[in-house]
Image 1: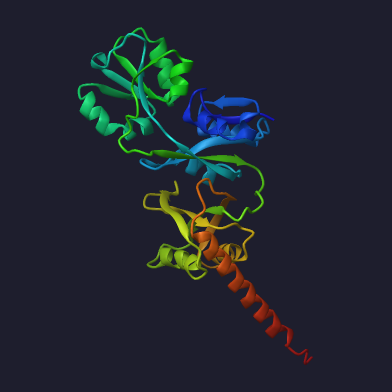
Image 2 (image 1 turned 30 degrees about the horizontal axis):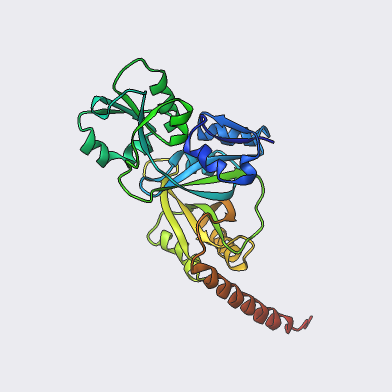
Amino acid sequence: MPVAYFGPPGTFTEEALLSQADLAAAERVPCSGVPEVLAMVERGDADCGVVPIENMIEGSVSVTLDTLAHESDLLIQREIDLPVTLNLCARPGTRLAEVDTVVSFPHAIAQCRAWLGRELPAARTRPSHSTSDAAREVARSRRSGMAAICNTLAAGMYGLEVLATDIEDHPENETRFVVVGYGVPAPTGHDKTSIMCMQRHDRPGSLLSILQEFSARAINLTKLESRPTKQGLGDYCFFIDAEGHIADEVVADALRNLAARVAEVKFLGSYPVGGPAGSGVERRRAASRAWKQAAAWMDDLRARIRDDA
């Protein structure tokens, strides 16, 4: 089965896909947007899909979060952390001083805002569907003075010259991508669980009651973000990433209590973490041991109940 990804060819998403040996060996099918990637997987035309979900500078990719939460039943299978290097590229013979228009994906433009203001203060910026689309547009345009912010993969693909490298405003820039598909991967010991919560009642302390379910079980949260529910102004839901896997009893117990007491929960996946293991691994193991000991103690107490009837 092919792998769908946010295209066209030459995007950072394809670069992330190629960093995974099993995905790189499969047929690759570029799609015009994140919803189209997920739709292709849901139709059964692709085994899985790869889409961007978060950048360390610009934050979450809202279309990915919203599509997973409100329009799809697919689950996250793994995450891929990709170091991102942004370059200013133009047709051969173009000089940096001649650039008056810079085209790229809005997230990429935002990540280079300070550099553009310093090096090309008079140039106007224009959004494109992706960094690769920007490179393709510049390569095909007959206008002089156009440049694209893209990666070297797209630059080479469309025959552009690199005018400047590493133009992002923050060094060690990374973007996180996720592989989406059906089913829940087996736990690896270094996992993350993602959910979307909608409060049943908007009242003081409702968010605190959600967070306390994790705090009481020593589950570390790596992300907490609010997004509109699309059901009314001022109506928000919460996206939460927690360390651990749904197979861990403490994580399962937290989600069970959350769904029963305070919120409607949409499970988005339990999957391997892309980055290095942190201190939370041992903390979760200790919490799991404590939970199992407490469960055994309670089972023993309940086993002593007499059948007086």
